[in-house]
Length: 512
Image (tube, rainbow, N blue to C red; front, side, top):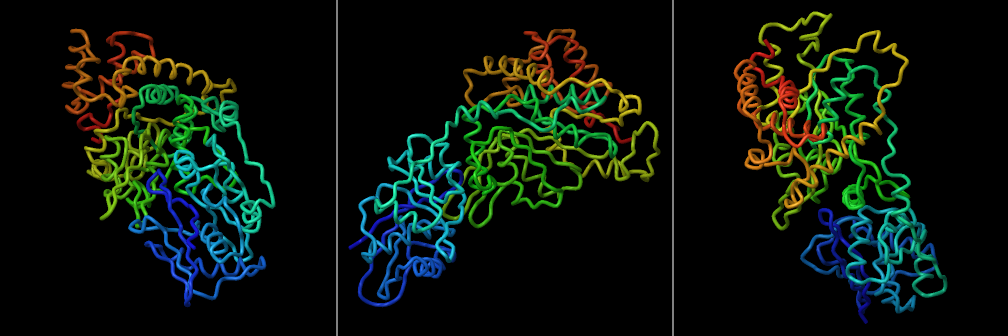
């Protein structure tokens, strides 16, 4: 008799069902076939110890476990529970008709306790899609799976609880969570607020423009000027996550195992700040079993790269294509996986190795040519994808001692949302474009038209400030966002003038 239980494997951010077939027959030995990895092959020891601890026996005959489809590699210890239940049923130690109705996943401890697993949300979504009645899983993962409605989420703490449930001796009430209600009450709650920042009004304005148009930003300034503090507050002025965005973001974090136990739907925009020693695989994703990298974990949120020139050149260069395409494709011999990567890039850097070039009070001690060499660590093609270049100057004592609270993130966010609504209406016929920053060159010509006075100003600025040709499109996009914030249908000359000042790194001779 062949016993079938059902598990699931995660590939990218999607899951596919695995049929686990168990046959107990004459002979000796324990075989797991169907391209299992070492963690699955070692499951025999965990399963046998868990069975003995609960009064069951591992059959001393031939046990064959087949994981279908057999040509796809299966990885991880999450198949312990479905394999164990399959063996118990095939050896007639348990009797039930319910095994085929549920997706079953969980890692077994030696005493039969269940440990949490990764990728629960995409598994639950796929289980509902394929018409399974429910999902039996470790108790610590139940909150996450309960995000998916119309699926019985059965939380169990031990193998014995799972056996009692499938045999009908114990009834476990499916966990139910009103996800929408929970999401609406907890969404958009951030610990950091722009009201805590004294001074730096010009930087706040630049970040407001960036948030309104989805633009990438680089901040250049001396140590201690507040670059990191300002960047950390950027998610608090971005529009709140929609339900669809929250689901997408939670799926990625679930696959990467970043949600922790008893986690539910993510309700704030992610903010990722990897250290400059990060590898290219850790940043964009990959590995033998491809996992999402930092740029995918920042999907629908902010990726902050502090001390940009200190990152390895190869790491920064692999980010160029995802910045353009808003997704990253990881190719292997047998499979190609897409991870979404629609994030805002915020970078910061010192103007020179000592940090005090162009400082109002302190002297730069870098030698001739050192400043330019330091800036050249960041390639032109990467800077080409950054719309706003902002010079950050230190805050004066009088500004720091100011007792009046600055403008809150909430009021800035309201202006940003109004500007985003204008863009939503503008791009309603273009499903892949959601903000001004995503406009291709041809669309910039159509949408960002300027009057003769504006053209004269832009021509003069490009000649006099030595702006590069690549700055042209960027200036028009930023000017369009500034006009949206001002509620203006056309790009006026003052909008262009403000956009031009955000191209400091394009000026010839900026570093002397």
